[in-house]
Image 1: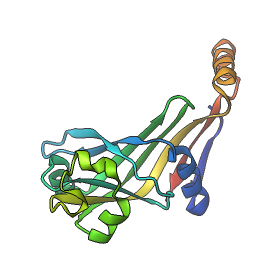
Image 2: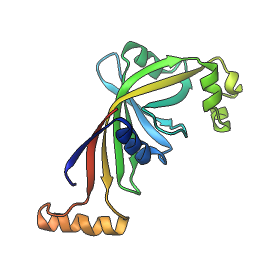
Image 3: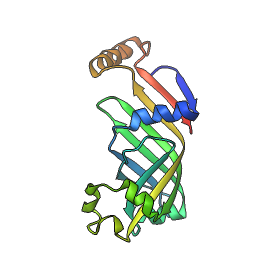
Image 4: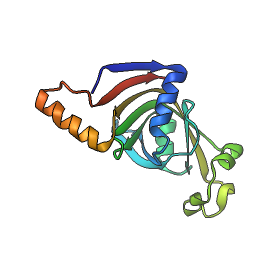
Length: 168
């Protein structure tokens, strides 16, 4: 990877938004009551990244209780086809905001909520991202593969991409 970059503000949010925009599933990690970590796949909402990420879930799920006990969460995004990866840390809040549920609702959620968007068990998870780390390939798969091989041969002398931290 190339030099480590530190981004913030609009520039940082834009960078993270570009890297996660096509990732449909991310892993949401919470802290369990015994100090262990629990991760589960969550459907990413198709909205522009502004520092906040939303999910819909069941109020009765274990993750909701874990977030009520400890609001620290991590979001892990992987786009291996483009060699892009993002981890984000933030604080979660749980709500039952009907307007937000309506805004986020799409027919695919009927699989989890057969009663539709008025199902009383729907909870909104709002994650305010505080910082993120990213790793991004600098070129196409073929070029990346050639650069990766060259980097191995030269002992790290070839730039294969970019990594950095974003302070949201």
